[in-house]
Amino acid sequence: MDLINQLVSNLGVSEEQAKGGAGMLFKLAQDKLSSDEFGQIADKVSGLDDMVSAAPDAAVGGLMGAVRGLMSKLGGGSNNLGALANLAGGFDKLGLDSGMVGKFVPVVLDFVRNQGGDSVGNLLKGVLSPN
Image 1 (cartoon, rainbow, N blue to C red):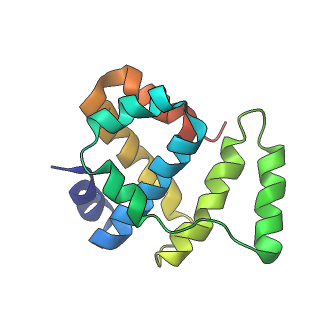
Image 2 (cartoon, one colour; image 1 turned 135 degrees about the vertical axis):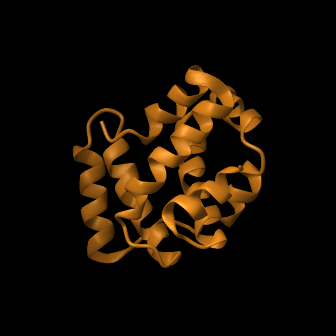
């Protein structure tokens, strides 16, 4: 079963929501990892480019943007907590509540680990873990 089907069946989201949500997680990984590291993930996940293309822009403005920016600064050296909080804006654009970010992460991590082994899974985990 591919990643999109797993997200649809495990989380009860639409195919469009699954593709966009997974795409945002992979886009975050693409932004945080070196091209070589991200390439290791991309080699193991079929359809990754389509998912990244389907990802809405996660940027948000106003007060929530300011709060997320502050969380980014407080999130520690890796800023993963703030980066994950920023995804909430994109999930909102997909019609998903911000709590779904935390539900997508373990499904995507398990899928990548199953496809690429622990070393590839750990690359993604390093980006998607809040600390």
